[in-house]
Amino acid sequence: MRIKNIFHLSIAAVLLMAACSRPNTQIPVYVWQIISDNMDMDSLQHCFQSWKSHGITGVCIETRSLEQVRKASALAHAEGLEYHAWIPSMLRKGLPHEWYAVNRLGESSDQHPSYVANYRFLDPANPDVQEFLKQQYLEIAAIPDVDYVRLDFIRYPDVILARALSEEFGLEDNHEEYPPADYCYCDRCVETFLTQTGIDIRKEEKPEKVAEWAQFRCDQLTLFVDRMARAIHEVGKKVSVDVFPGPISYAEHMVRQQWNQWVVDMFFPMNYHEYYEEDLDWLTSVVAEEVEAAGHTPIMSGLSISESWQHPGQPRSLKDRGITPEEMETAIANSLKAGATGVCFLSPSRMSDEHWKALEAALKNLANQK
Image (cartoon, rainbow, N blue to C red):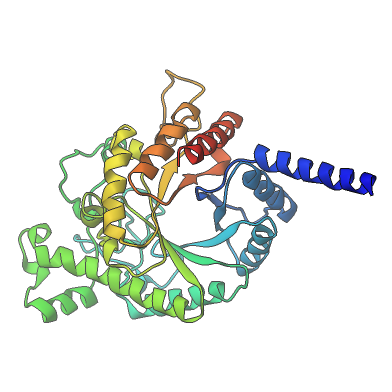
């Protein structure tokens, strides 16, 4: 009997020590990651195990096929991770020409993409686009281990670029709309707007100054999200969305997202301070705005990870100007104290050993402060 009791006490002690050594996961922490077509599922499971051990509670994964979603989501659940199936929405290639948005110059985004070659945006007001995407979302929602259908690129192209991107593309940071990136002026959108308002936007000398026209595009995205979210909710799954910061301070005038009007289950604002050439204090103010805009819907503050923090002084691209290990706790703390429910990192493939250690320490410190 004594040996049995000692054995039970020893097991309890081991379990207690293991629990104390794990990162505190009271704070929801997500990661975003794209997996390639040839990603080995054993390797992916190893990633999930590793991320979980560092304190990650959920994964947002972009895959190329339904079968990959099925396998990846099952592996995530096996590791106790929440699974968001990350789906690009408006940013697509290889679809019918008439489905694509048309800019102020009369150019279709599939033939004359703005800024970069892959900026081929669909028209969210096109009924064929809506039906095509709805069916894709429902196929994904039908997979048992998918917790959330996560919608990305629910927006128009950046009619106004973030400050750092303006510099990269050699454009003036004057907060003016860029005509080649001003969408959608297709016949259907122009005629619908004319019917609703009596304004022929193609005859306006400065269409970018017509407030009703800006609102019309915002409304098209809101109507699109409403239709997609209703369909996904009807089959018992939740909806999460990637959005620009704000929405009033950035998202609304940059990409037509009035996402405070969207009825979804979780927001992931892309609070990449480096794009706006801001410091980490900016997170406090922008997240506070987002939390107020979202109401009772959780905000997961999106943070990007720096890849080249070990090499100060070298020329750095935008993806290298993100969160360093030294900044990890401050970035998380600023988001949480402004009201965010949790955070999300882009992406785990950029995380160094130092980042992971800093994350574990930050989660422990911040949990103890509650």
